[in-house]
Length: 526
Image (cartoon, rainbow, N blue to C red; front, top):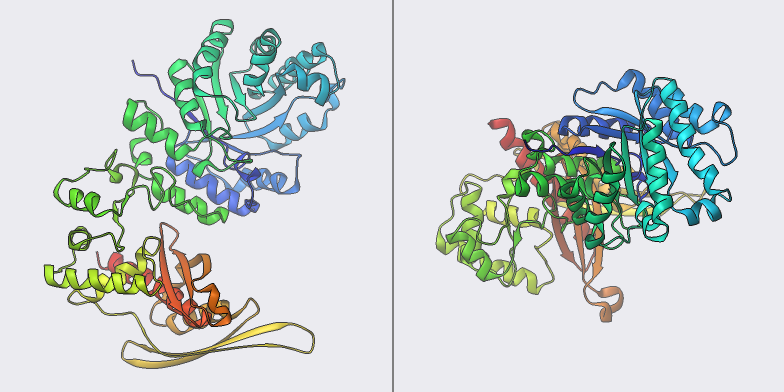
């Protein structure tokens, strides 16, 4: 019988400890719903009592969160050193969270017990056992995270094992071996997990950080060695270099090893879920993120793209569609006509070889001028669509004017005026914005499009980058602006190049909106 991996997502707790990630309680509720839809088994919602946002999340979850597949877990710690469980504030906060399952963390490295907690090893064991018993007596089902277990096991094996044995005797339903510093290498994982499994009958879990770049590999090896619960984060979010990435662990186990993880339809939703969570968390998916990144199945070199045109999957380790992603042919000076023809064919666009070759030459010319299409697949899409029959731009730019000024109170306000042709008619709009010229342009464009293209409100600018291309020219240098736009399900890049940074920004911004509107129009027509 095939063993099933238990997927325990800690994006909403450990994932929020990463740099640049700070979701609101409402945003955490939205992510929890996505994780439930994906089909994970447990969702660690946060640490009640640690901060007001997590307290609000658990309070709102009681009435606003209806999970169909997953189970919500509250995270906390054991009682204080030399304290009593009956009046421990942290344990009381866990009870107030009102979840059936709780996960508590305790020290398993003797060095931390003696130095960080400044208590005895005996008290360290009592902290674990008493806390688990206290929670179980009050109806909670308890998981135990053995913090710094792998380091503790190497430093004082018997004490680390005594900690997990104490947790097992106290009634913990899962004992999770944590590589808190992220320094454990793959060859150290299997023997450690097997040794623990021989000492306790309780089901084991693992929690790996990625400081050595081994979190995903270690998680897979731990499962093969006998661990059941795998603690992961979407997109590898987490403290320092992050945690084991759910979006890699799940397909590695399911697609390559035949292990049951999440429902089959959930595996096919990994790409869209990764990007939707990224948008909510305000931290875009890295392009080279395995399986779900925009570059995960991107091909640039002429040999590779030519091979793929003749043999599907020639340079891909899986079919991208299995995780909801798709292959991308990057257009650059390295590509050939087959790349463009393949891209057009995959999207159902009619393009003859002569037109494809002309596009190749056009792209090469643009790249010589400073354009770069590797991260601007949206701009490339518009170039190809423009050469196919029946394509119509959602709007045409007739004029752009931007000015910025400072009022007597020191407040800076930008004003953008746009003249556009939309659906055969001319539209002129003016918009003010406190956040600069690009914000003003974005607001003006949306105001102009909203009456005829209400779907524009579903598009969001999620990243904006500027690069100086000719630094030796000083203020006359050309700049390249890269914009990433999202519709909440996926994202795309667009590019603009000009000596005027406002014009470069407008080219990239407007192309991003055009791509979103065209795709929305095609979806509604299906």
